[in-house]
Image (tube, rainbow, N blue to C red; front, top):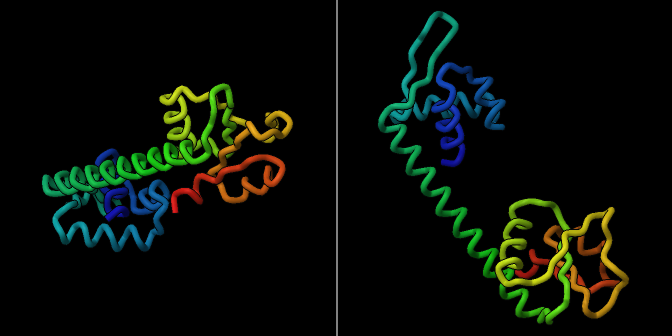
Amino acid sequence: MEREHLILNYIQNEEQTTQRQIAGETGLSLGSVNLLLKRMIKKGLIKIERLNARTIRYILTPYGLAEKSKLTYRYIKHSYAQITRLASAVEKLLEKIQVGKGEVIYLYGPQNEVFEVLNLVLSKGKINHVYITDDIRPPEPSPQIVIIVWDLPDEEKFAPTYRVVNLLKELR
């Protein structure tokens, strides 16, 4: 379903395209795109219009638009549930590590969706936090310093010198 959603989104924006372009933009193989397009045409999600001997235009049918909307809704609902689960895990983690007033939490990891949720929860809770990188290191180790990581190899960069908590382990 997710692969169909990718194709339906692309076709809605680019009706005059090729299977090769769809494959390139969606990250799917050309064979997968061909198979999925045939399946979606059979289901009535897409219809084709031959513009000339070499060019085909893909058009979303009303049923295809409705199905795309359903898939988008499911995707948003699933994403929201994941974000809520992650935010809850961050809140439980903060309770577990018992960060006191004046303490700073250091965040280390890729600036991705996990970072955004961490940043949001920490800001909402008015907890001092600093994003660190390989160039920006935390101060000398002390019991008050907590480093939160969310990429498994990153934990090893600071442990056992610092108090390191891996958010991914807390999600299990």
